[in-house]
Structures are given as C-alpha cells and as structure tokens.
Image (tube, rainbow, N blue to C red; front, side, top):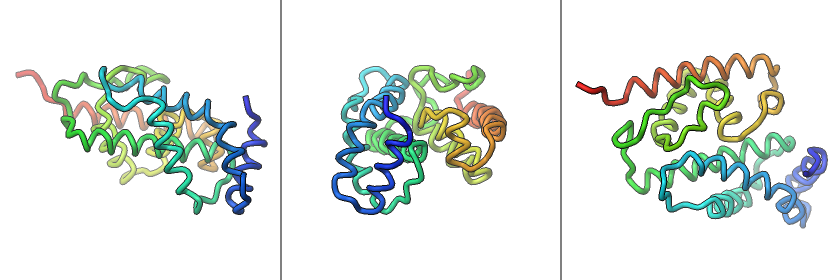
Length: 192
C-alpha cells in the first residue's frame, strides 16, 4: 500500500514536468486503478467485451494525455481516474448501441446505501445521462456521486477534493441517491 504523500509528491513532480515522475507513479497506483476498474466491471452486464485490464490500460493512456491537469493530491488523481473510467465505459456502451433507458436491463435500485451501485447490470448510459442532468441542477452532488461511486473515494477523500466538509459530502450523497433513484425510475418502462 502506498502512502498518500508519496503519490502526491510524484503527482506534483509530474505536473512540474519532471522526467520519470509518471513512470514512478504508475507502479504505485496500478493496484488501486485495477481495483477501481474491477469495481466498474463487476456492475457491467455478463459477457461485456471490455475487460478490467483493458479499462486500466485505456485509463492509463488517457492519464498520460492529462499533463495539463494541475494535480492536487492522491485523492484528486483517483477522482480524475474514476472520471476517465466512467467516460471510457459510457463511450464503449454508446459505441455498441446499447439500449438506453431500460430495455432488457434490470432497474438500478438506489435504495440500498451506501452500496447503492453494487447491483449487477446497471444501465451505464442511463446512469451517465442522469448524472449529467443532476450536474446541470447541482454540479457538486453529481461530483460527489462520481467521486464516491466511480472513484471509490471515502467521504473524507471526496471532501478533500471538493474542499467541503465530510458531513456536506454525506448529505449530498444521500440527496443525490434519492434524486437519481427518482430520475432513473421515471424513465423505466412500466408494465401495462
């Protein structure tokens, strides 16, 4: 397990253009990136053609292109990584033409806290659309969901990234779950 200060130091060195900082950083964060990718992939439909390793590799390639990011610390790095993985999965789902808003996908229940998104087979496109709609209304709540669910950050780590208190993160998390539950269920096909 790497220490947050060690990762933060390498991120700052990378930001400052020090050669070798990225090469030193990646082995330290590889297991955590793999854990994030595995978390994402366990929620995908059976037979998904994108594998955990491919998701990590694609995220790594996109991170290398993020040289303009002004890295703050370890939590910020994993928040950006989570956002990249979310984008990769959504882009993949959209490119495959997966049904939007239901179809053969089971409803995503947001009633079970805090592991609300642990259910299998969520509609990643519908969730992305709902998060984008939430971001238009309340960007911080959308960001909290992204950090907690997609990034796997604790309330304290998310609070550090957002520069708010952990209590604010927990309140936003709770309200966002309720809003997303309503939004996702509103567009599900109903039995006649």
